[in-house]
Amino acid sequence: MSRNSLAVLALSLATGLGLAAPARADNALHGRFELTGIGATSKAGSADAFLGARSRAGLHGDFRLTWEPHWGRWDFSLHYVLRGASGRDVALSRSKAALLPAPPPATLFDLSETLTDSGNRRLTQRIDRLSLGYSTPHFVFRIGRQALTWGAGQVFHPMDLVDPFAPNAVDTEYKPGVDMIYTQILFDDGSDLQAVAAPRRAVAGGPVSGNASTFALHYHRSIGAFGLSLLAARDRGDWTAGLGLSGPLGGATWNAEIVPTREAAGATRVSGLLNISGATTLAGRNATYYAEYFHNGFGVPGSGAALDSLPSDLTARLTRGQIFTVSRNYLAAGGAWDWTPLLTLSPSLIVNLDDRSFYVSAESKWSLSDNSMLLIGLQAPVGPHGTEFGGLPVSGTTAPYSAEPTTAFLQFRRYF
Image: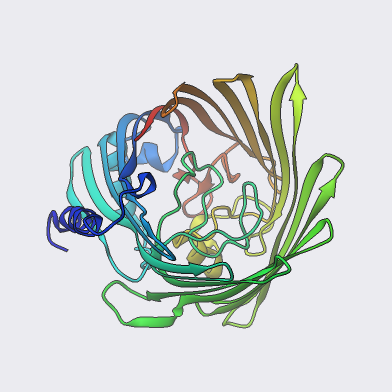
């Protein structure tokens, strides 16, 4: 799309349709502003150091304008996102992108635009939601760009086929929108059946391809105190099934998922997770906790595998953001502790059980007012070279190694 056309589209839709909308508070324009300062340091021998950015700092801004009016049984959603970044990490990400294969289109239409991308600065804009829906007490239909989440994973999401969050994601308030057709049937017994069709192109500008698209059914119901979820999908040329079970355990809740995938090439990979979560008091203060085991059926056994030697099915999922880890077995744990009613501390840990490397993070969230907050966080991968979080070799057995940097951030969020 031409420069500034996305902003014009967003504002014209919000203004033009707003003239016909009833005067209700929930039909007003809302949004969120984020400003994040980041400092990062990578290990010697890392790919970042090889590209001349071992230590770096950056400033990131994110402005989201949302409009979600309702007219009786009809609803509309429009989210416009403007993002800017400044710092050495901008040039680093550009250098990395030039060395990696381009990911396939994540969604059908390209409603994003790069306004500037040179040196240490980048400014982009995107229509992240653009959908029209119709609903009754027993039926929901929605078409357009929207977000979808399936599964009960705390950190890992094998049943979430459409743009799952990465395990180390800091901002999980909004999933990226994807162009799809969504239908939900709600039954009198409380169960529901969801159907999704997310068409995609195999390459940018190419025709719509069934082998690049996702078609899925998801059924959920309660059986006494237990929950049952079933998944059947044709996802990017592979057949995927899923079984999810949940139930109470004392004062906590457990979830189990098993997700087998029959690949077009004939192999079957089975992923799964088991987690427990709950709420308690710690030193007289409210706290929540979770622990989760995850098995990555596409992962490689052992440790030290070079990135250019990974299996093609794993590489494809890493490239398109469906999987974020390369080994097979992981344990994650974490929680949140309300130090005061306005200050929450959230530590977490991810352990690669195959090579014993781990990823630790800690975050504090301070509520400044009813509509603003301050976040301070630290994320650090720990392990020797040759492990996943310590750094896997890009090729062969020596440097450069690919690993996440140790990162500290300070983020301000304001809602309106």
